[in-house]
Length: 145
Length: 130
Image 1 (cartoon, chains in turn brown, green):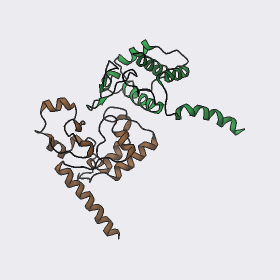
Image 2 (tube, each protein chain N blue to C red):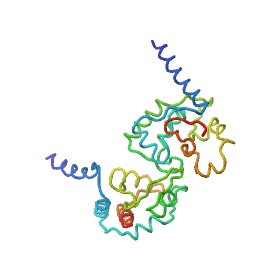
Image 3 (cartoon, each protein chain N blue to C red):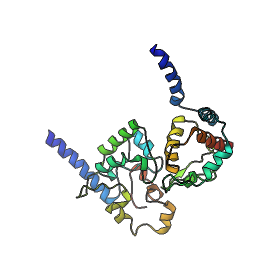
Image 4 (cartoon, each protein chain N blue to C red):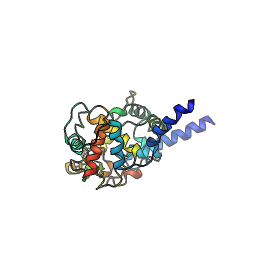
């Protein structure tokens, strides 16, 4: 029974990884508190874009969240961390790295380098602004537009 | 005897738990807490000034909020921020919990500390006067 479960979980995680490689679909955030709090300054990024250890570190350093204070009350913070960790992506690093910026990940850079013109980037202002170009990003769809 | 202690605590907690407030109520509440009258002019100066002591990427309220609070602002991420002035955005300053969350975050980003009740009263007074 445990073996079957493990296999099922592995299959789901693996499927998620394939989707991420193609940069087409990543299940969007569905958890109410995460959706509300994490979309205040940017869209709520899918949990699958970072491995679990990243979300743990991210959610314990909200007083300096990429240069801003994004503090939350402890109850909400813990609830969001639990959701993000439970829905995190596979850890692809070989060195227990803890990536925090999705836009620094190799696949992200690979997908965006030479794809995005200066003009497009100026309009978006930041790599954080997925939906400036990916109009359906909030639905988890990151196809090239 | 215990109830004598509990009752004042309930009275204190009541406004914090309230789902809604108004800009005028907030100015009154923060002014009472500060023990001084709010000044829209001081609020304007505080809002428009460049500060040190906070995080280097956010030296002013206007880093993300427009210097014209009736206009849209823009977060460093590129995401638009709705106007702060209640005359341009009727949802502003109607939810105490929301207001306190964002004063808590943004005062720490910009000043490196919490804002005082007097500063909050001044800023809300200025934004409400526009």
